[in-house]
Image (cartoon, rainbow, N blue to C red; front, side, top):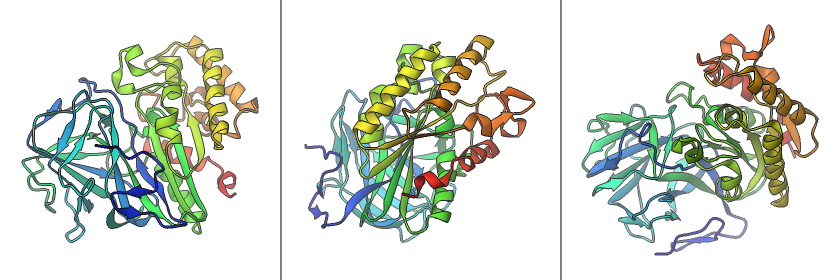
Length: 398
């Protein structure tokens, strides 16, 4: 079986016409299995229904399915798409069967990712999409995305095509094997922005099912004010992620590969990419015990790589974490040094002062209480909105 690679112009009998191209509409970075966070070690004769929030609108879509960290092939008995209603229900009449090379049973070899055949379904940012996968035999959930603000639903047996959620009795805050959704576009005047970050970018403490992650809220602003453009803001955030160390290096496999290792796959592989918002480093300080010089060197490498690819890249200052579990005065000094460099450097194409937007003026090393989720590190819904609102839209006009 041949896996389809990003950027290719044909998919299973469908030719991309002149002027058309695939654009990313939704994305989830895949990570290593981590038993402390995964609700399911295996799925066996079960259906998982995952809810995704598309950005770029279109009437022809395809999925990217991943078995990146699997040691064995995975077999899907059926895969279905439908417009999401609520609580695991889907909108009747919107159900579409998904195939790969025109076959209903989809097999993904270990360590591979594939694109499905195109599917006719009108999608937009107005309605979420439900992706239902029936797993007929015992299969390890080794490739996944831990996503606290999104709910997935589990049913025993094959219920991939059911509009009802009656049989979906179990819930989890994770998605499995689905890494992306792309739409076929005319490709005119489009902008694909990658939000590269950790749990704050992933939106791990935003209200479940609300799409209040800051990349979603920033996308909403762009759409309201740039209505003549095709825009998507793809979320490449991973809980616990670092610039320099991968999750297993610090005993946290769910944190995935480090930024410098995942740039090609999670950032530059997206067709139509124009910009990157780089917002990483706080976990390098808190979990990785990195120095300011080490973090800055990693940021420089990422910026240089983006420019080599012809992509604009912007840096966000590191937000306050006073009183967080891994806070110390020494680590605060590192954060201040990194932020000072971000504010004065000329390596990135610009910077966003997220620190200033979210800090408590009376205690600058702490989040403003209204923006604090409660652990003094992560954000409330109001904090995610304040972060998204602090990004100047003028930088995304050209």
